[in-house]
Length: 257
Image (cartoon, rainbow, N blue to C red; front, side, top):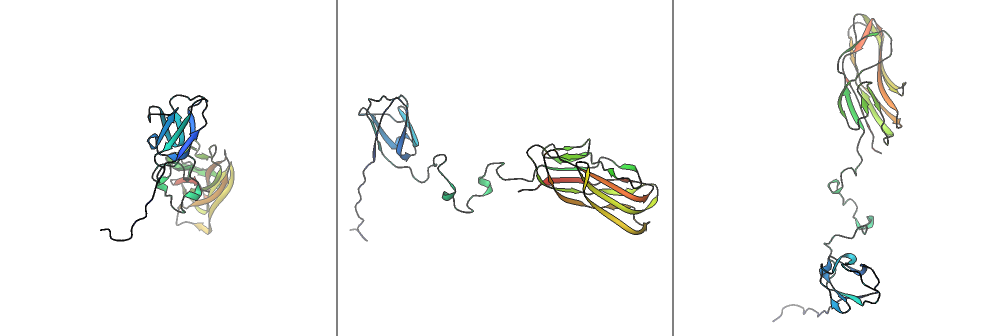
């Protein structure tokens, strides 16, 4: 005895496709298939063996041997491609993807933008004996990292490489101190672009400072750079016999967007 509603009978017929033949091995199917085993192919009323005589994927049917214009060819679709098969190349657009459904784990390496080029350099030794009130380039001759080989330790200079124009965050932390004597009245750190001052930070004292002789401060700027532009760090100190740079870092990276 059957409990519940009696299910309705359903009948299924297999779809058939007739081909207009020519001297070729490639044909297009009306319905997509997973592989050649989902259709029966007949040439001149003789059933062909899947894989050996033909292969199929999606809507592409490929024969092992070319047909002629006089051949009779048709196929019967034994099953339709189900939802779990891979879609044909180029068949999926943004309309088929739900909003916020794709995570970074599904993206190929390099698809997402990164904050590169990026570099960080530090001093390799003390830079001393600089004359009072003399703006001088500070040396950061030891690389910590340099993603695009764009930083030159011999010149303490970052140069924008080909294809990497954009806005860059530039930062430096010079460790400036005077040497043999004097009392500092002013200390500066400067960011230079293409040999000219682009930004700076300055400490001024109301009177000569005899208490602190070491100044470590942060220089930060966002600059719009073109390919070939170069960045350097300069410093200056006034009111002393001589001064120098005794450490610190010079780093930066390209902003996304």
